[in-house]
Image (cartoon, rainbow, N blue to C red; front, top):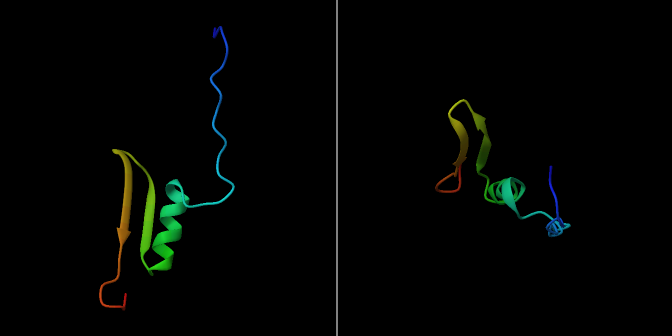
Length: 55
C-alpha cells in the first residue's frame, strides 16, 4: 500500500523529438533505417546510415 502524496508527473511534450519517436524521425530525415525493440537478451537499437548519398 502506498501512503503519502504522489510525486507530480511532468507533462509530456505535445510534439516528437524524444525517445524512440525522435530517433525514428531523425533517421528518416537522413534516409537511415532505424530498428528498435525488445529482444530475448534485453533491448536493441540499430541504425543503418547510408554513406555517400545512396543506400
